[in-house]
Length: 550
View 1: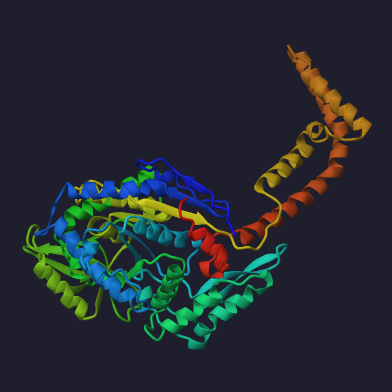
View 2: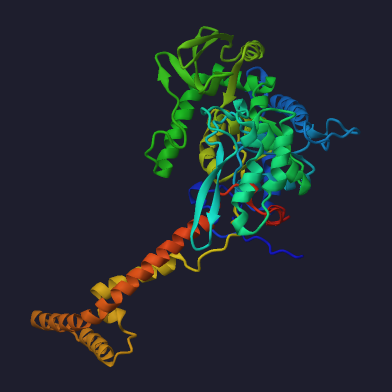
């Protein structure tokens, strides 16, 4: 069966003004900046820009650091993805093929997100296949799990509502990488309960085939994030996209990442200044007054400077901030500028080998050292990817990362690809729009303040006559004060005579406004784009996500 192509909002290539990025509002609509066709050229442009420079990164050239990162990440991602599939991009005839291939990289938290987020994975996978490259999704499992439930629509088209359906019992907030199943029975029954909750809408959701895969992966890993990732990636493979997956909790233990960390810590005063200046400039450009959006500035406590990394130990219920201060040729580290973690032998220009070795010792002792939002994409764009794929939110805040690349790394800024989409559940909708409500509100205003306009189409002869008299009086020129007063008295008289007929209609219009308002509220539930992808019919998802060109 031939399916309708999703509508696309695409833009000309060139530097994007992310302030104007808007979420697609209509069902099956895509936003891509630049277009999928232009993204091919973007990869080559980024490759060329980064090969024209070769910065020193703490005693290692940038080209060497990128090659080292790709080798380590490729092996780690194959090992991780191989826990649920044997179909890996390993070529016996050319085992080092990935070193020269273009890398298309994206990432997101391991949540049961909406289909517009999932679309990034399919877009980067298709682009990598077109370029014979590596497609990698970074699982941002160092972020905190916000909830153990998803929202599910129930009721009818006329009276829909949303209920939460839990996949596990509530627990203290902690990073995804530390979350394991608390209530086995509740967890294993989640797919059946979610599908049953949707039963009144008369379709089969993806979760009926998705959730058994999540439960099965519990035999491999007890971590909830791993089960979600495995099941999602298996669905992608069923639909023709074979991305590699790698959690940040794995990536952040790799030596090239620790070299990157060492470089920032060795240069922290300079990085700290550029970071905070860039955050303030972003807020000013975008008219933001909040001191926490999109990220807080890095703080200073005495001679301690906050670094752009999280630290915590297994079992901790919160992530802490990593602070550092220089002491001669050493960099001292501390949790929240209080609990000392020891010292790294790092001056501004020395080789980072000893720093990496010390960080590895800390990790072996149970310390979790992880990226924060901007350093996740900073590392990915500078040290790993040839093209990074963002959603709308990430594209906006990565304006700051652009500044860090240009000012701290002193590199040409590689451009990224912004991809997002909107897909609605097949729930139906009410036949009203905001324009209908606006029109009825204007009608009410006219009935109360301009009855001649509101009643112009009346079938009553007396009302039609008065409306005509009103228009005639309105057209009479009033050249002096006496004429203006006479005209005002005549218009007021007519409006007064029309007021009784207008008052009869006011309750009807108010009732229409109330009904349209109720229907619009129903549509906000019925047409919400934020429902988890597991609640959608597999066929609708596949048609939306696998369209080859948008």
